[in-house]
Length: 344
Image (cartoon, rainbow, N blue to C red):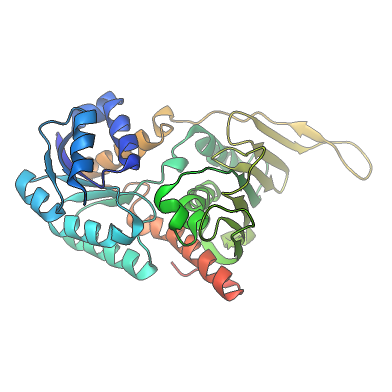
């Protein structure tokens, strides 16, 4: 079955979606872009020209373009403030929806979208592409193997200084909402635990070129006494970490580290006598399923497969609301200075 799709929101991020589809034969065979929607018609027209989508209907109103094209899918790539309107419009029109993150600007909106998707009998999933990379899949598989015993902690550092310009530099809580949510979601996936509570300190450091919230330090309590800590800054010049953060995972028998790029190291306790017992290295196998490691393309493929099979995709809204709850809980904690329980 071939699906007709509308891409709503034709800014720079939309190009990553279109490249993922065009460069993946299975997706290119499964999806036809029949409409482009943007508040600026010229932006949509330019995108159509760049990607050879001459036959696509171009418009500024999603409802009108859905009616004109009878599309099956809507790819939602709008700014977070516009997300609820776009997704609810698409679901009510009978379209399946794949959204950029965050899935909503509040838990109430997120819950409403979950209900709408259920009522419409349609899939609403979220692009958490960072969990669909080799490193994250390898960490999850390694923990599941029990090689370092029972999971006790996950600790992530994220320090970069990107100068985006545009909407990010004017956002509230820019690091937590626009970037940290990737690491939060990946940590929840790797741990396979439920987030229970958070304490967070958020700052906009001296020298920041962002208007608000370019750095954050958060401590999350997960189920089964697992702790997840995050230290991050988006205005950190100098030697950077990976975009995927650097990771240290502790278990009851040993430890795993990942630099966010190629370097994995794992070890369990050694047999030396004295204060420190040394360590013995442990191999870290690759991911079990290569098709799950291609970022955007893997998320889109998972979405398409869910529609075909009737099964919920991994990043279905009913699951992804927990990652949204982590972010919103961290923001509330930063505002109040208090530990915040996570209820989603």
